Length: 267
Image (cartoon, rainbow, N blue to C red; front, side, top):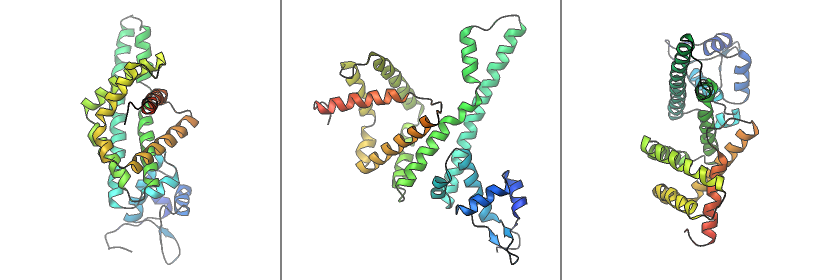
């Protein structure tokens, strides 16, 4: 065991402090996610190392990852930093959404107190923006996507590449441009013509924005990410998850690009 100042806890106290059950601790041990210290009496004890590992496991479990994926992710100090970052982003996202939801509810209550009815548009916005459950949907999807990338590439290079992509395209300007292009793609999808000049021009613009990252990313890593996305999406659809994007729009753009390649209009 460690130094004199280290604290060690039995299963019951560890479970209480972490907000889980002792049964969960046994499952995590059985799956090889945590190895408690064994005292001379064979009693399980959990110290700083085990508690840090359990923190990672519990956070990733809460984000929707299966134990098999968690086993590949936890362990090193760098992974703990990644888990803490993801947890912080998730909580901040929830916090922002809750603030907006409370402001909307307060405004609706004031309107009703003044004897005024809520319009259909106001009711629609109130319904959509005050469903707290939706705030974790995107985080869980991305967490699962990242887990699948890590599973398929134990070297970690694909994960590092994906982190760079997020940094490169995570700014407000990029997000606004992407949102506008996706709205345009949605309109083109409704028209249904994969060979229209407007659809082809949009694909060219989207490819132009990502040309740099595509040139610097090996084909094998690009294929790995595409496979990870396809599997993440299939799992989400099998659970009937509510997605924040329309997969049919991306499929439409894929068909447009494929048709352009077949005609020699794209490299």
